[in-house]
Length: 254
Ligand SMILES: [Zn+2]
Image 1 (cartoon, rainbow, N blue to C red):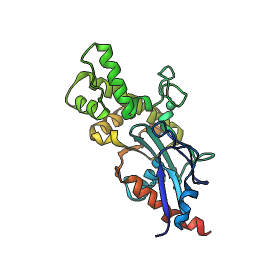
Image 2: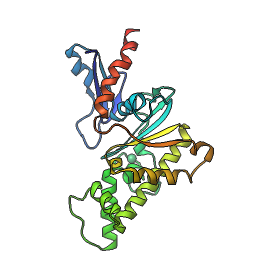
Image 3: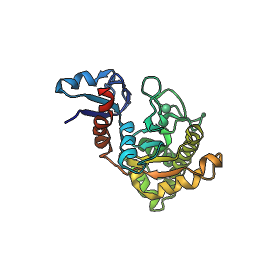
Image 4: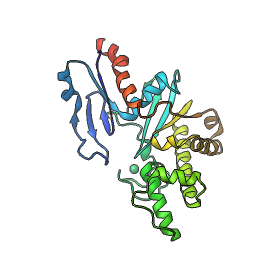
């Protein structure tokens, strides 16, 4: 054993090893000093955001292995982001950089729980997809959606040819592609990795993003970018979190 690595949802101060603020999904996960809590185990402790550690796994062993400029979007309950620049994670001032789920794709859009409006997460997360489906069903006066309607069901219905579900997925792909193009303009990446439960619906979503992205934005920037599915699924957090111990051990010894 060389150390303990943690990948957690929420905003993490990597230097301090603390969870600064959680997500609305885990309300009490805030100002938690995880490093101090875990250090009695007797090994070095590394704490980072879950999407950061996922991207770490992808750049080491996954679809982005060997690449130096990579962005990641994880589409799950919310939308998380991470960026890999010159072989290291982009952290910003205190660790919360790359909240790509809260990049605005419609400044006239609905309020987001982050305090902004029209954020990508409202359209491209599992929660957002289910919300858009409910709204469309209400507008069209069709069948009352089941209270348990979720993104998985919407994606299945869209693939089966349901026109309302297909329209929802169309909007989701438009929002996601627009965000990808803005991020390409900002970061000039080689690759964008799309992961998370929503993307596990299959290659068709990836194709939808690729087709849209290549028609948008500055072609010199957009054309060379590979848009790829994450290689790691649910196990990414474990691989990436553990990987921290091996990658960062040297910095500790310096
Ligand atoms: Zn937001």
